Image (cartoon, rainbow, N blue to C red):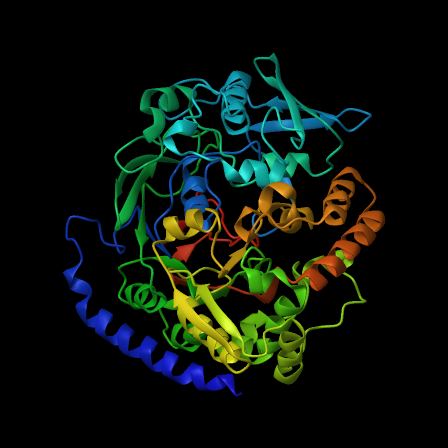
Length: 543
């Protein structure tokens, strides 16, 4: 089946919608400063954040806003996965690899004037880690799922990597681990774990980080307002510890879910820069002399998850049949062009040192797929609910038509697909409510440049409740060994074995490693997109 037939209707829809929006641009709220105003930077986000509470999010829309409000213990050099000091100025590990000691930056203040110190770090970490923490507000539905995904489990559980957090003195904090974890500094310093003001959290209670409440960090911008469904307003932190930053006075983050609408508003000057455009829009960006196209370095995966708790998908042969039935090469060509690559590895090509060369790709083969279905007892196919995201993301810029392409391929082998979607926050949370979605699209841009940052949040025991609590003891053992091993060559062999097992299990099918398409107006300087999917805007200037 030639999947290029999806491309041209999509192009037509994008272009026509862009024309409509460019003609309607003047209907925008006149009280908001226009993007053309000096000192005001307007960013077009692919959607609204879930919340502004560090440690309680997993999505990129939330991380990008949090990057502006909060600092983390470490940060990454612009445009790279190399880490450097931030709120921590240095760190060291004990001889046995189990105790990490961080020296903290002195003299830093939160936006509310309270002091950043070791007690503040301990407060933040313990509310993520400890289910009994009085300011964790678990009874209000807060789950801190990313903590479990990255660090194995919560306090009191045998899976918990963290064993204790110790304030040595005002500027020194220690983390005691159950076993060595070579990537611990970048894990605890990743984008999920911004350090928030304990005083602000106590003041706001369970509403912290939600519209109408507080979000207080030490970062370059101060939170001012969240207009639900529309925008977030941030202002320059005049007391930022990085002298001379940020470069602009006000940052407006607009929520524009449709890529065509984002591009139309960029062309009209209503926003200054944006992300996650559809690859088909690249020519339109490049044809506009006021715009610059910027491909973000590829470091992600877009995947199709198959939940084994749904009886037909409980059989690996059925999951493998689905892998064979989807014409990935054609779909990637149709929807990403030269900005996407399909392969059989969950990790991207830049981590090929940790991939297996023994894997035989699931090449498009509907006849073999039908044979596997028959062997599993489904010669007449079955019904399947496939959920697609309501927002464009770096790995799936146009989720619905891509889902329609999957459905068309699966129908050819007798699998009758019903497509579903829902609000983004509900999509992320409801997929984890038993029995979960039968099949769903999602993806991942990690916050540190290591195979662990792809595998552990998706395949460790605490990370698989969205696929029926699927578990493979061998994978668990290998992931723990990978974390505890310092030698790169040895780690490469460990992760290659993980690669092989997951390929055969086929519970999260890798579809694409993409180069997300970003764009800016030519007068915007100093924006260096990160391969990790989000970056601070503190260095951006409007010329």
